[in-house]
Image (cartoon, rainbow, N blue to C red):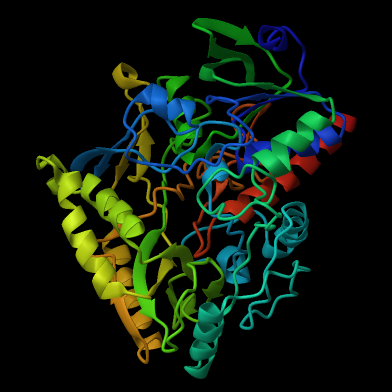
Length: 514
């Protein structure tokens, strides 16, 4: 049956099944187009509850679980490192493992950004944010600091006693916390899907809100365990997609080709397809790579309430855009200050530090983890997402001799280090009445939030994509993952990816009907 999919004619072939690819595929299939999803990873078992682990090292074992099979090879501040980034490779892509946080950016993020120009305005994007929030059943509460028309969000479940007390304490201190916007539905018999595959449908992601509804229309097909190795061009079009499937390279033609393999994967494929980079007249394919900087800190509630569980329920934007400084959102992380969580994050930090070469470094992390548990006690873990800016020297690269690995080069800019210092100072001041402890020592890049590597814009000299996310250089190639973003905002990128995919999908359907 899978080989039959390669023999059919498709109106659109979508490479990747995450937030962008899954959402766009649903729009096109429900609009009557014939859509083929191509996914590098496996179908997996629908009932599995699998967390994304960095301590499984065998490529086959990782691939079987829907993890990206090979480590990311990174040169960060001139130092080479290799580690497993939090990337998925299965139906739903990385979104199958995400924490389901779907927050909107602010108007100044698009309309008045000093370091990035968006070819669409906040008002143009607003109705697509509305549609994405409805499609993903987003629950939460209005941000009291926002002057924008608030979305019609679903009512979130009641706070536990500890989080309720913490929110009241924040308000007493003059802060403005609100219920974080989340795509978790809390279906009976299912719980704790943060950072895990959801065995039911309580978490809406690229799989449950995208691929599965698309397949249900009868207009979509799905090819898994299939790797797109390159794209062939002729006369300003993608003329063939080269796919490694079942040990053989196949060629597939399509009217429309849509890249949705993630900001690292899509840029990697375009660099692999042409020595100069596919659709690269601007020279910007793979460049302007952005992440967020994570500022993790423990916060102790003043109220002594025992027995409460860690939950991802609180967000605040008091420090988002302060005195001309662009910082970002502060959110509860949905993890406790327990031994397992602390050990996990210590090992992640070790894997990206020179100490990773020490014998038994993973085991040595157990000692500070045990000490931290006693010290942190009933603390809640929060994270500040510090906005990153795009710089051409921060980029995805391609090594033909190691083509099965993703490669990046990234230098933490002096201004980012300066803003990080100011952000930490602002956090200390905002929570001065609470006991707190920063858990991030050195700058900590959020490798789950890559974006910007194929930015869109109105000028072909300064962007790879046009305002519809079609490449300037090729007439049948679009990109709908986080690659298109010219700025990273101070919020999680998932809602913006989904909203943009809906916008592009509407454009493609209108184009197909003319």
